[in-house]
Length: 329
Image (cartoon, rainbow, N blue to C red):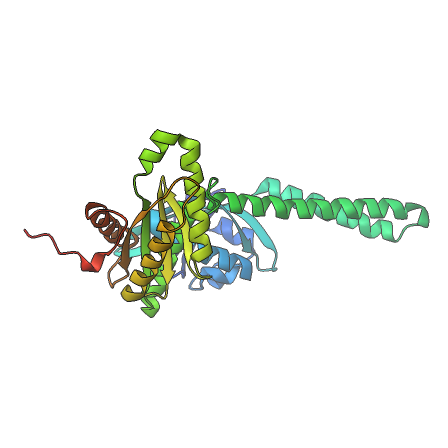
Protein backbone atom coordinates (compact mmCIF):
# COMPACT_ATOMS: atom_id res chain seq x y z
CA UNK A 1 0.00 0.00 0.00
CA UNK A 2 1.42 3.39 -0.97
CA UNK A 3 1.96 5.98 1.76
CA UNK A 4 -0.69 8.37 0.41
CA UNK A 5 -3.41 5.75 0.88
CA UNK A 6 -1.98 4.51 4.15
CA UNK A 7 -2.09 8.04 5.63
CA UNK A 8 -5.28 9.19 3.88
CA UNK A 9 -7.65 11.31 6.02
CA UNK A 10 -10.23 8.51 6.07
CA UNK A 11 -10.24 4.84 6.98
CA UNK A 12 -9.73 2.33 4.17
CA UNK A 13 -9.99 -1.46 4.13
CA UNK A 14 -10.62 -4.19 1.62
CA UNK A 15 -12.27 -7.53 2.31
CA UNK A 16 -12.79 -10.71 0.37
CA UNK A 17 -16.25 -11.70 -0.83
CA UNK A 18 -16.53 -13.81 2.33
CA UNK A 19 -15.63 -10.87 4.58
CA UNK A 20 -11.97 -11.56 5.41
CA UNK A 21 -9.88 -8.39 5.88
CA UNK A 22 -7.20 -8.26 3.16
CA UNK A 23 -5.74 -4.75 3.57
CA UNK A 24 -6.23 -1.87 5.99
CA UNK A 25 -4.65 1.59 6.10
CA UNK A 26 -3.00 3.20 9.10
CA UNK A 27 -5.76 5.77 9.46
CA UNK A 28 -8.36 3.07 10.15
CA UNK A 29 -5.96 1.26 12.48
CA UNK A 30 -5.58 4.50 14.46
CA UNK A 31 -9.36 4.99 14.48
CA UNK A 32 -9.96 1.45 15.80
CA UNK A 33 -6.86 1.29 18.07
CA UNK A 34 -5.47 -1.85 16.44
CA UNK A 35 -2.11 -2.91 15.09
CA UNK A 36 -2.08 -4.05 11.47
CA UNK A 37 -1.27 -7.67 12.27
CA UNK A 38 -4.23 -7.81 14.67
CA UNK A 39 -6.75 -7.21 11.88
CA UNK A 40 -5.32 -8.75 8.72
CA UNK A 41 -6.83 -12.16 8.07
CA UNK A 42 -9.69 -11.64 10.51
CA UNK A 43 -13.35 -11.38 9.53
CA UNK A 44 -14.68 -7.83 9.26
CA UNK A 45 -17.46 -8.77 11.68
CA UNK A 46 -14.86 -9.12 14.44
CA UNK A 47 -14.93 -5.31 14.72
CA UNK A 48 -18.75 -5.13 14.94
CA UNK A 49 -21.35 -5.44 17.68
CA UNK A 50 -24.06 -8.10 17.36
CA UNK A 51 -26.53 -5.44 16.17
CA UNK A 52 -24.19 -4.21 13.46
CA UNK A 53 -23.41 -7.75 12.34
CA UNK A 54 -27.15 -8.22 11.70
CA UNK A 55 -27.32 -4.87 9.91
CA UNK A 56 -24.28 -5.81 7.79
CA UNK A 57 -25.94 -9.08 6.72
CA UNK A 58 -29.39 -7.57 6.17
CA UNK A 59 -28.42 -4.45 4.22
CA UNK A 60 -24.74 -4.14 3.30
CA UNK A 61 -24.14 -7.61 1.79
CA UNK A 62 -27.41 -7.84 -0.21
CA UNK A 63 -27.12 -4.25 -1.44
CA UNK A 64 -23.50 -4.51 -2.63
CA UNK A 65 -24.23 -7.90 -4.22
CA UNK A 66 -27.15 -6.38 -6.12
CA UNK A 67 -25.69 -2.98 -7.06
CA UNK A 68 -21.93 -3.50 -6.79
CA UNK A 69 -21.54 -0.50 -4.51
CA UNK A 70 -22.77 1.09 -1.29
CA UNK A 71 -22.84 4.86 -0.76
CA UNK A 72 -23.00 6.67 2.57
CA UNK A 73 -24.41 3.82 4.67
CA UNK A 74 -24.54 4.77 8.34
CA UNK A 75 -22.74 2.16 10.37
CA UNK A 76 -20.78 1.60 13.60
CA UNK A 77 -17.44 -0.16 13.99
CA UNK A 78 -16.17 -1.38 17.33
CA UNK A 79 -12.74 -0.27 18.52
CA UNK A 80 -10.21 -2.40 20.32
CA UNK A 81 -11.44 -0.78 23.55
CA UNK A 82 -14.99 -1.98 22.76
CA UNK A 83 -16.33 1.47 21.93
CA UNK A 84 -18.73 2.04 19.02
CA UNK A 85 -17.32 4.33 16.33
CA UNK A 86 -20.08 5.76 14.08
CA UNK A 87 -18.99 6.10 10.44
CA UNK A 88 -20.34 6.67 6.96
CA UNK A 89 -19.40 3.61 4.93
CA UNK A 90 -18.79 3.63 1.17
CA UNK A 91 -17.97 0.39 -0.62
CA UNK A 92 -17.44 -1.01 -4.11
CA UNK A 93 -17.30 -4.65 -5.21
CA UNK A 94 -14.85 -5.37 -8.02
CA UNK A 95 -12.48 -7.92 -9.50
CA UNK A 96 -8.76 -7.59 -8.75
CA UNK A 97 -6.06 -10.12 -9.60
CA UNK A 98 -8.73 -12.67 -10.50
CA UNK A 99 -10.54 -12.39 -7.17
CA UNK A 100 -13.65 -10.54 -6.02
CA UNK A 101 -12.87 -7.93 -3.38
CA UNK A 102 -14.88 -5.23 -1.63
CA UNK A 103 -13.03 -1.93 -1.12
CA UNK A 104 -14.46 0.28 1.61
CA UNK A 105 -13.89 3.81 2.91
CA UNK A 106 -15.05 4.77 6.42
CA UNK A 107 -15.52 8.44 7.40
CA UNK A 108 -16.10 9.24 11.06
CA UNK A 109 -19.47 10.88 11.79
CA UNK A 110 -18.23 14.03 13.50
CA UNK A 111 -21.63 15.53 14.24
CA UNK A 112 -22.89 12.28 15.71
CA UNK A 113 -19.81 12.07 17.91
CA UNK A 114 -20.40 15.62 19.08
CA UNK A 115 -24.00 14.71 19.85
CA UNK A 116 -22.87 11.70 21.87
CA UNK A 117 -20.37 13.86 23.73
CA UNK A 118 -23.18 16.27 24.60
CA UNK A 119 -25.23 13.38 25.96
CA UNK A 120 -22.26 12.07 27.97
CA UNK A 121 -21.65 15.56 29.28
CA UNK A 122 -25.29 15.79 30.38
CA UNK A 123 -24.99 12.40 32.06
CA UNK A 124 -21.85 13.50 33.90
CA UNK A 125 -23.66 16.59 35.11
CA UNK A 126 -26.48 14.37 36.32
CA UNK A 127 -24.07 12.24 38.34
CA UNK A 128 -22.55 15.35 39.92
CA UNK A 129 -25.96 16.83 40.69
CA UNK A 130 -27.10 13.62 42.37
CA UNK A 131 -24.31 14.16 44.89
CA UNK A 132 -25.23 17.79 45.45
CA UNK A 133 -27.57 19.27 48.04
CA UNK A 134 -31.31 18.69 48.18
CA UNK A 135 -31.73 22.13 46.68
CA UNK A 136 -30.34 20.85 43.35
CA UNK A 137 -32.49 17.68 43.16
CA UNK A 138 -35.17 19.25 40.97
CA UNK A 139 -32.48 20.23 38.44
CA UNK A 140 -31.28 16.64 38.38
CA UNK A 141 -34.76 15.34 37.58
CA UNK A 142 -35.26 17.89 34.81
CA UNK A 143 -31.95 17.03 33.17
CA UNK A 144 -32.65 13.31 33.48
CA UNK A 145 -36.01 13.70 31.80
CA UNK A 146 -34.44 15.74 29.02
CA UNK A 147 -31.82 13.04 28.50
CA UNK A 148 -34.47 10.30 28.28
CA UNK A 149 -36.63 12.35 25.90
CA UNK A 150 -33.67 12.88 23.56
CA UNK A 151 -32.86 9.18 23.58
CA UNK A 152 -36.47 8.18 22.86
CA UNK A 153 -36.75 10.81 20.14
CA UNK A 154 -33.59 9.49 18.50
CA UNK A 155 -34.97 5.94 18.56
CA UNK A 156 -38.32 7.14 17.19
CA UNK A 157 -36.69 9.04 14.31
CA UNK A 158 -34.47 6.07 13.39
CA UNK A 159 -37.47 3.71 13.41
CA UNK A 160 -39.51 6.16 11.34
CA UNK A 161 -36.75 6.52 8.76
CA UNK A 162 -36.30 2.76 8.52
CA UNK A 163 -40.06 2.26 8.06
CA UNK A 164 -40.30 4.99 5.41
CA UNK A 165 -37.39 3.48 3.49
CA UNK A 166 -39.10 0.08 3.24
CA UNK A 167 -42.83 0.92 3.00
CA UNK A 168 -45.11 1.85 0.10
CA UNK A 169 -46.87 5.07 1.18
CA UNK A 170 -50.23 4.32 -0.48
CA UNK A 171 -50.88 0.70 0.53
CA UNK A 172 -48.70 0.36 3.62
CA UNK A 173 -47.15 -2.82 2.19
CA UNK A 174 -43.42 -3.35 1.80
CA UNK A 175 -42.02 -1.44 -1.18
CA UNK A 176 -39.93 -2.58 -4.13
CA UNK A 177 -36.64 -1.86 -2.35
CA UNK A 178 -37.54 -4.10 0.60
CA UNK A 179 -38.72 -6.81 -1.79
CA UNK A 180 -35.45 -6.76 -3.75
CA UNK A 181 -33.34 -6.98 -0.59
CA UNK A 182 -35.49 -9.87 0.70
CA UNK A 183 -35.27 -11.68 -2.64
CA UNK A 184 -31.48 -11.44 -2.67
CA UNK A 185 -31.29 -12.71 0.91
CA UNK A 186 -33.43 -15.76 0.04
CA UNK A 187 -31.30 -16.46 -3.04
CA UNK A 188 -28.16 -16.42 -0.89
CA UNK A 189 -29.83 -18.81 1.55
CA UNK A 190 -30.97 -21.10 -1.29
CA UNK A 191 -27.40 -21.42 -2.58
CA UNK A 192 -26.36 -22.71 0.84
CA UNK A 193 -29.38 -24.85 1.81
CA UNK A 194 -31.25 -25.45 -1.49
CA UNK A 195 -34.48 -24.84 0.42
CA UNK A 196 -37.00 -23.85 -2.28
CA UNK A 197 -39.03 -20.70 -2.46
CA UNK A 198 -41.38 -19.24 -5.06
CA UNK A 199 -42.34 -15.84 -6.40
CA UNK A 200 -45.73 -14.52 -7.54
CA UNK A 201 -46.34 -11.41 -9.63
CA UNK A 202 -49.97 -10.27 -9.34
CA UNK A 203 -51.38 -7.76 -11.82
CA UNK A 204 -54.87 -6.21 -11.70
CA UNK A 205 -56.79 -6.90 -14.90
CA UNK A 206 -58.03 -3.83 -16.82
CA UNK A 207 -56.82 -1.47 -14.10
CA UNK A 208 -56.38 1.38 -16.59
CA UNK A 209 -60.09 1.14 -17.37
CA UNK A 210 -60.93 1.84 -13.70
CA UNK A 211 -58.65 4.89 -13.61
CA UNK A 212 -59.94 6.22 -16.92
CA UNK A 213 -63.64 5.66 -16.07
CA UNK A 214 -63.84 6.45 -12.36
CA UNK A 215 -60.70 8.49 -11.74
CA UNK A 216 -57.45 7.90 -9.87
CA UNK A 217 -59.02 8.05 -6.38
CA UNK A 218 -61.09 5.01 -7.31
CA UNK A 219 -57.97 3.32 -8.65
CA UNK A 220 -56.13 4.07 -5.40
CA UNK A 221 -59.02 2.59 -3.41
CA UNK A 222 -58.77 -0.62 -5.44
CA UNK A 223 -55.03 -0.81 -4.80
CA UNK A 224 -55.52 -0.38 -1.05
CA UNK A 225 -58.35 -2.96 -1.06
CA UNK A 226 -56.16 -5.51 -2.85
CA UNK A 227 -53.22 -4.79 -0.53
CA UNK A 228 -55.37 -5.47 2.57
CA UNK A 229 -56.71 -8.68 1.03
CA UNK A 230 -53.23 -9.98 0.13
CA UNK A 231 -51.95 -9.03 3.58
CA UNK A 232 -54.80 -10.88 5.32
CA UNK A 233 -54.19 -14.06 3.31
CA UNK A 234 -50.40 -14.15 3.60
CA UNK A 235 -48.68 -16.37 6.14
CA UNK A 236 -46.28 -15.01 8.75
CA UNK A 237 -43.28 -15.89 6.59
CA UNK A 238 -44.63 -14.62 3.26
CA UNK A 239 -43.35 -11.27 2.00
CA UNK A 240 -46.02 -9.15 0.29
CA UNK A 241 -44.94 -5.96 -1.49
CA UNK A 242 -46.15 -3.46 -4.03
CA UNK A 243 -43.87 -3.80 -7.04
CA UNK A 244 -45.15 -0.72 -8.85
CA UNK A 245 -48.35 0.59 -10.44
CA UNK A 246 -50.99 -2.13 -10.26
CA UNK A 247 -48.43 -4.94 -9.79
CA UNK A 248 -47.86 -6.71 -6.49
CA UNK A 249 -45.33 -9.40 -5.61
CA UNK A 250 -45.42 -12.17 -3.03
CA UNK A 251 -42.38 -14.20 -1.97
CA UNK A 252 -43.29 -17.64 -0.61
CA UNK A 253 -40.40 -19.06 1.45
CA UNK A 254 -40.18 -22.85 1.64
CA UNK A 255 -42.69 -23.23 -1.22
CA UNK A 256 -42.22 -25.56 -4.20
CA UNK A 257 -43.91 -25.35 -7.60
CA UNK A 258 -47.09 -27.28 -6.70
CA UNK A 259 -47.67 -25.36 -3.48
CA UNK A 260 -46.97 -22.07 -5.25
CA UNK A 261 -49.70 -22.83 -7.81
CA UNK A 262 -52.19 -23.74 -5.08
CA UNK A 263 -51.37 -20.55 -3.17
CA UNK A 264 -51.63 -18.40 -6.28
CA UNK A 265 -54.99 -19.93 -7.18
CA UNK A 266 -56.21 -19.25 -3.63
CA UNK A 267 -55.24 -15.59 -4.06
CA UNK A 268 -56.84 -15.36 -7.49
CA UNK A 269 -60.13 -16.92 -6.37
CA UNK A 270 -60.41 -14.81 -3.21
CA UNK A 271 -59.80 -11.58 -5.14
CA UNK A 272 -62.36 -12.45 -7.80
CA UNK A 273 -64.95 -13.06 -5.06
CA UNK A 274 -64.17 -9.96 -2.97
CA UNK A 275 -65.61 -6.89 -4.70
CA UNK A 276 -64.22 -3.45 -3.88
CA UNK A 277 -67.40 -1.43 -3.55
CA UNK A 278 -68.93 -1.26 -7.02
CA UNK A 279 -65.83 -2.68 -8.68
CA UNK A 280 -65.44 -6.41 -9.28
CA UNK A 281 -61.75 -6.89 -9.93
CA UNK A 282 -59.77 -9.88 -11.12
CA UNK A 283 -56.06 -10.48 -11.29
CA UNK A 284 -53.63 -12.38 -13.50
CA UNK A 285 -50.77 -14.13 -11.75
CA UNK A 286 -47.37 -15.33 -12.94
CA UNK A 287 -45.37 -17.71 -10.74
CA UNK A 288 -41.80 -18.98 -10.71
CA UNK A 289 -39.89 -21.29 -8.37
CA UNK A 290 -36.18 -20.90 -7.72
CA UNK A 291 -33.78 -23.23 -9.54
CA UNK A 292 -30.04 -23.70 -9.43
CA UNK A 293 -28.28 -20.89 -11.24
CA UNK A 294 -31.16 -18.43 -10.81
CA UNK A 295 -30.50 -14.79 -10.02
CA UNK A 296 -32.98 -12.18 -8.88
CA UNK A 297 -33.27 -11.03 -12.50
CA UNK A 298 -33.95 -14.51 -13.94
CA UNK A 299 -36.47 -15.34 -11.24
CA UNK A 300 -38.36 -12.11 -11.89
CA UNK A 301 -38.14 -12.63 -15.64
CA UNK A 302 -39.62 -16.13 -15.40
CA UNK A 303 -42.51 -14.91 -13.24
CA UNK A 304 -43.09 -11.93 -15.54
CA UNK A 305 -43.15 -14.19 -18.60
CA UNK A 306 -45.70 -16.42 -16.86
CA UNK A 307 -47.77 -13.32 -16.01
CA UNK A 308 -47.76 -12.30 -19.67
CA UNK A 309 -49.01 -15.80 -20.57
CA UNK A 310 -51.87 -15.42 -18.06
CA UNK A 311 -52.80 -12.08 -19.62
CA UNK A 312 -52.59 -13.42 -23.17
CA UNK A 313 -54.72 -16.45 -22.30
CA UNK A 314 -57.68 -14.39 -21.17
CA UNK A 315 -56.72 -12.95 -17.75
CA UNK A 316 -58.06 -13.98 -14.32
CA UNK A 317 -55.80 -17.02 -14.25
CA UNK A 318 -52.54 -18.42 -12.86
CA UNK A 319 -49.54 -19.59 -14.90
CA UNK A 320 -46.28 -21.09 -13.65
CA UNK A 321 -43.18 -20.43 -15.72
CA UNK A 322 -42.29 -24.16 -15.66
CA UNK A 323 -45.48 -24.88 -17.62
CA UNK A 324 -44.63 -22.60 -20.51
CA UNK A 325 -43.57 -24.18 -23.81
CA UNK A 326 -40.07 -22.97 -24.75
CA UNK A 327 -39.99 -20.81 -27.87
CA UNK A 328 -38.71 -22.69 -30.94
CA UNK A 329 -35.73 -21.36 -32.92
